[in-house]
Length: 270
Image 1 (tube, rainbow, N blue to C red):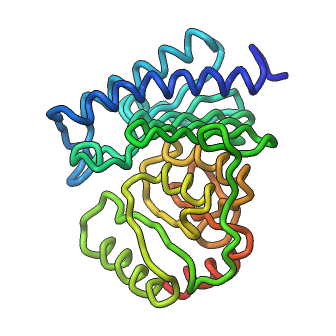
Image 2: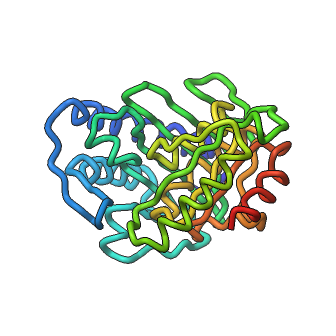
């Protein structure tokens, strides 16, 4: 038993929080958006802020001793170092650009790390009403039904997903598009959905076979998805093939059968 309750209790609270945030996202999705720029193409809306406040308040009432890292608050307050304490890591609205454009790949992502290990994960897309959940050691689920990563063994039959990232300087974009160009010769097709958390969930439920991204926002993008992929029998790793580091802003994921070939293809695309 972890402090202040079981992992099941933590998951139930995270699901409640995600559903409540999902209502805010759903109602805002069909209305006029008020958009601010964090960077050249990095957006934040009133909905991002409202959802983060709701989720943190909800979880802090139940687990006052836990730590909290969120995209909007810690980006502002700078308190994002990950300790060994139970820590809720939240992306209140992953896919803000999609949200602004009315493209239905948006979600709230709530992960809990214990001893720095992602242990509970909830990702909820309120527009498509898809709730992905996992507890370390207990399997992964979509709307309560077990999910598992794909059994694809060949890169050439694999669906690859990645993101363009938020930087628009020429060296970064050239590296990014050159890599995609190289990989496109080796896979079936490419997707860019605009949500790192939903990309990971896509690997977990077998809709997607291969995923990598470099230079995303921070641990809030991957904390929940990493547990969900692992519990679905998928692998999460560094694009170099090294072990995944939740604080590194680099991630790759696939089923175990594709990992070695994928890492080699990524290496050749450098």
